[in-house]
Every structure is written in structure tokens, then in C-alpha cells.
Length: 197
Image (cartoon, rainbow, N blue to C red; front, side, top):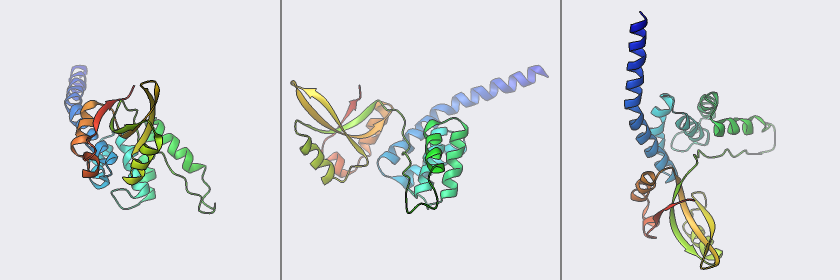
């Protein structure tokens, strides 16, 4: 009997290890689509992963349900998926639920904005760099990219240098995939993958 249980356990581990790269690729695809604003595609890719227990996907699906990104807005389903992620000790989900819990339902239209699904990232797409922050801010406004970009400050030739970064990616492969799938308004800027230090 012990040998059978041991065999089943080993078989389950092997099957799980075979599925992990596929899950990782699917999650990357869902994350890239979310970052690019392709919420319907992101939702279709991430929902099955959430059902399989991928904690990051559970929070992302909860977030999309809660705000109606890529699916009909459904606060109850959003809270369900965020709770699933929180049960697995996923800090962004725990933080989001704490924010919601401390928001009074009777307060006058006091909206709580949950943190979007994020994972620490090592790569981004650099759209432009300039010595004047106003130039970077103007491009950010012109392209209407305030929610998907950040402005980073660095030093270049001894002066402050401002960089417009688009998206957040864990790997260079993920960033390159995002670059391939970027909208025309992004591609026309000839962005490149930048490692965040």
C-alpha cells in the first residue's frame, strides 16, 4: 500500500513539473495582454490558470472582475478570486482586501482603487529618454499612456536623464513578446527592451 501511495505521489510530481512550463508561458501571455490593455484576451488566458490555482492569475482575474476589465463587472466574483489568492498568502490580494474592508459602503462615493496586478519586474520597454522631464511627460500625455508607463530618472553625461518606460516584465522573453504585440503607437517609437537595475 505504501508503495502505491509513493508511486502516485511521484507520478503527480512528474505531471506537475511537465505542466509548469506551459502554465508559465500561458501566465506570461496573459500578463503581457493585461499590460498592453488587451483585457479580454488576458481574461480568457488567465481565468483557466486561476482555476488551476495559479495565485497571480487568481488576483488578476479578481481585479478584472472587480473593475470590469475584459469581462462584465462583477464585484462578488472579483472578491471571490481575490480571497482565493489571499488564502494562498499572496500579498497584493491581502492588501487589496484590506483596502476594501476599510472602505465604508456608506461613505459618499469614496472609491477605493485597488493596486493593479503586479509582480516585481526586471525588464521594461524604453520608449524615450530626454534631459528635460517635460519632453517625457508631454509624450506620455500625447500617447495617453499614463497608466501603463513610468518615468525613471538616471544620470547621463553627468546630468539628470528622464526615461519613459512602458510595461513591467519578469523576463527579457516576456518583454520581447510585449514588444512584438505592442500597438502601432508604441512600435512607431522604436522601443527597446531595457533591464531595470
